[in-house]
Length: 155
Image 1 (tube, rainbow, N blue to C red):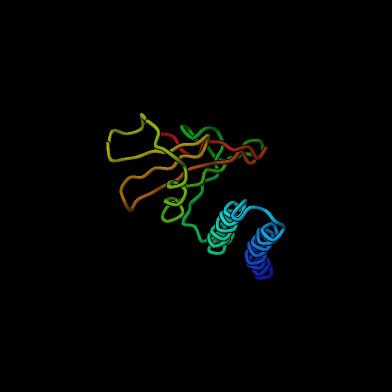
Image 2 (tube, rainbow, N blue to C red):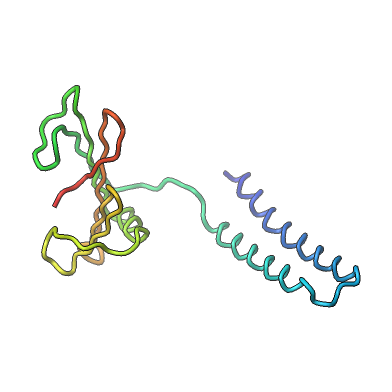
């Protein structure tokens, strides 16, 4: 991980310098002053900005507050899991749920509940709910027999 970060920082330093050298060489070759220089400079600045943002982010697993339930049948009428039918429903809460909620895009209209303060975001079979400014939950599930994603919550 550290080696990859060092390589990324090195790339972020080398490319803008190379771009500026290229721009200076074009200027020495008799080209009109400023021709292409501003484009190269803008490219270098954009690259450095992207590198600065990337340097502050690293892929890492974080702890999650979650519960799960293994069952068979449907969520509306679950029964004990069997050898032929087993599903899992996950319920994620806390910061992880808030992070998911914040990145899911706009709210969707829901017919689950009547509290106007409750906000719901759903994408395919992932559902996240904001009950209050400090209370978030996300639900998703999988069919354990074929690995397919299934819903993890019903109203």
